[in-house]
Length: 437
Image (cartoon, rainbow, N blue to C red):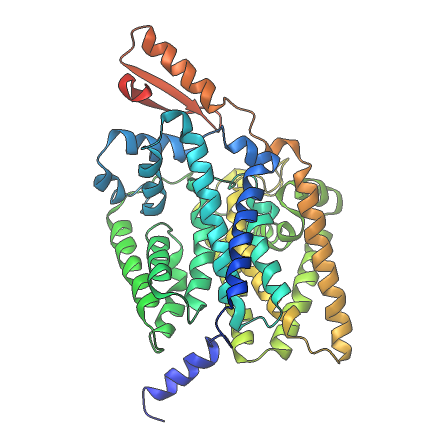
């Protein structure tokens, strides 16, 4: 082999081509799944509430900037220390709608983009998971995972957690439609501060044919890096990081939350202590070990990389944003910063599903891993069902139409500007009355 052929062969081993392109029926099925995913996200109780409740930076940063500042300035302006290009593009589009539809516009756009991430996970996993039902289940977790359907549900402010996972699969998806996927990974890179961890995958892809996607991703990475170097970021707190608490919080926020959802941890952990951590680790470790034992080189690599990303993301999030409210002794345990669990849980499930898919049919290990498969499935289904019964996931603050009516009343009383309140509590932004209408 020549100097270039050896790394190219290794790259082809760890990032293989799918066996065949999607059939026409598969595209129809993905279109139907996209519609079903969007409907699920918008019509579950928490999603229904999002249609009339504007969340956090969607209002107080993206919407107000789109209505008050030039579009180009907004697209290149960092917030919180990094670029949010895709959320700001959506905000510019929502700003073209009547202001009454602002909350619904953000919610629908976020649901559609999240459904797109699920489709990318389904298509990108074809070369790694032989079972189509297994691929479908993995992609469905992007939509139904309880950790993703409270704080991060249907808002652009937290979409970057899903974009990170979508970029991961887009980079692993050889044979993907070049232009749309290249645009997606570029926008993901200029919308998330964590995409740098995916740079090794993009660099490996450069040794393979069809380099448009990794080049687009790396270009976005450079743009994001430059923005972050010159941007300022106000830390959440100056509390000293507690390594023991970071470890406990990481274990609760990933393996435990993956199988129970964030809300249930406040019941299980105080009652059973570290036993819930041990059970969750065992449930995750068995199929991951099977993936390392029975998988091919691509599968084993994916198990290790996914598990590593799960650990890196949760530890980085906790350490960089540490404050005393993240300690596990709090009354709600892991509800503060609930968003930190999203990407790590999805990466963990990727490693688990590779193992469940790779185990041979006729081995005694199959019985063990098969039992694990059923336990994983039961745990996820139960946690999804239980999450849908939790009423506090529904936003109960001031609805957008009520906030808009109060703002218009201020303008009618002679004010030059009006205050628009929205979720969560004490969040608001101010617009001139001609923008309120």
